[in-house]
Amino acid sequence: MKDYLPATFFFYIFCLVNTVQGQSNMQTWIRINQLGYTPQGIKVAVWCSKENKEVDGFQLINARTKETVYTSIAGKPFGGYGPFKQSYRLNFSQFNVPGKYYLVAGNTTSPEFEIGNDIYNGTADFCLRYMRQQRCGYNPYLKDSCHTYDGYTLYGPLKDSTFVDVVGGWHDASDYLQYVTTSANATYHLLMAYRDFPSVFSDHKNAAGADGKNDVADVLDEARWGLQWLEKMHPRNDWMFNQIADDRDHISMRIPKEDSQYGRGYERPVYFLSGEPQQRGKFMNNTTGTSSTAAKFSSAFSLGAQVYKNIDKNYSKSLFDKSMSAYTFALKKPGVTQTASVKSPYIYAEDNWVDDMELTEAARASLFNNIGAKKWKKWKPQVNKAQNIITSKEMINNAFQYALKEPLTPWLGDDTANHYQWYPFINVGHYELAKQVEGNQRDSIIDFYKKGIEAVWGKAKSNAFFRGVPFIWCSNNLTTSFAIQAHWYKQLSNDDQFAELEQANIDWLFGCNPWGTSMVYGLPSWGDTPVDPHSAFTHLKNFPIDGGLVDGPVYGSIYNNLIGIRLYNPDEYAEFQSDLVVYHDDYGDYSTNEPTMDGTASLVYLLAAKEAEAKKVAGRKEKIIK
Image (cartoon, rainbow, N blue to C red; front, side):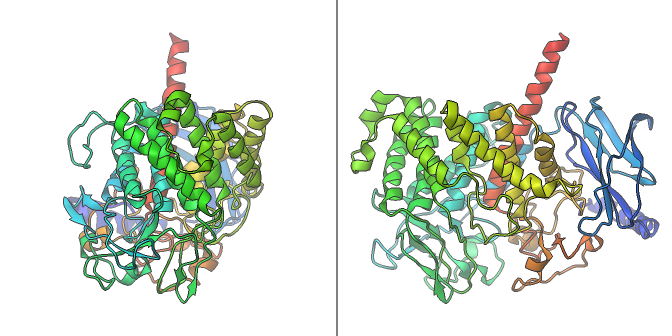
């Protein structure tokens, strides 16, 4: 919950005791988006009660003047959900005057919130703080280096235990493992965020992540950090590595430079991308090929080459070369690459790869059109016959064929999935492809997005939170990705029928959920946000992990069957837990309260999109007034 300064400690304790006594019989709450709402956007709060009671209407109150500025009926009752027996959606979208307000429904008052065009300003940049803190090699937050001995190879191509330099990149989560699949996806989202919304990002850090401008947007500095590590993980045309370290990482919590549990001093294992099954605890994983990881490499390099074309031409050319060789590696053995483990069965059990191939073909086509056929032919390395495709039309057709094989990301509409089984959680290839095609192909791609949204809406429409995303591990990552998909569908189709569903998923992340808490550390600064995540930084050193998106709620059935989970402190959200779903702001709950690097990178894109959208609407309104 929200932390307080030591200077106010005794006053806080006094207020807390009185507040708890006054609310001990509280049975009704109003959940809001703590970031606030845009004037022209959808504005909904959720009234929820542990009693089977009804509410007729609600009032919107000006927090400064205490005047009622808007009244409305509460609408239809949605019934029970999670710990609640009754719930309503309080929609005040018609009200569009900026200011600070709160809602009153019956005897229940909401926290204060803001209506304004600037509520998203700086939020994407704020989440970049967590990305910088996750840096491996030189870490600008710690002002120290870690994992500088990475690492020794396994599964070829060199003799096992041969040293290869793969220092860099990001730690995956609160552990210090590093996976190409999540890092490439994160890199792509950061590059997209800069490409699509360059004006929302600032320049306060240099390339090393330290204070000081370098005339490059901080998001692009972070994306380049990811690209440079991916280059190290693909050092030769016929070499590609999939991950650094394994589940032996989980032996203890420690500051990253203290890793020494792999039997070779400070070196960690580097797993070659062999396309063959590798260790998964006592068994072997279900790796079938090279495509899922290699295609993620290729698409990140392609977009990087496009973004850097007018910024750093030599680097753009280098990324172009890497994109071509990674594409060839993806075709080496069509199939999926899963991660390896040594002690436990927990891995990233990715089962799909055609979505990755769709994206890399679409990204290559976009790069081809961006740099031109002449330069493409000049730059194109003759790696093998597959590289003889020299027209974007052929690449687009290839991408469309892959799209037909997985029109919907399989988790959409489902109740469960294995850990990272359908990854990335959004088919980015559909978006990149739809922008480059016309007619029936474009209509088909847009319809794929629509059908996926409808599958989630089929579940969401029956509860007041409009919750249709399953409560599996990393449910917040799925929520972020789904909101992006709904946003892209709206942009591509000019159809806003799912706008309220899109906003409900964003609202969920920032407090409009059963627990009334934001799922992003420190955002907003005045809100109820995580303070006791499953993180060595906070647990051992009390370092804030600003901007980190935590995993999110899981089904009660998942939580109750996980290994090694226990709460270290009384559960401040105990009255909001249920058999359906649980969330704990407690260091001991690694299933719901561990921040992830890739989820945070996706959130950077989503928040940048919302900031740009708010500015665009505000600018349009100002133009009309003038």
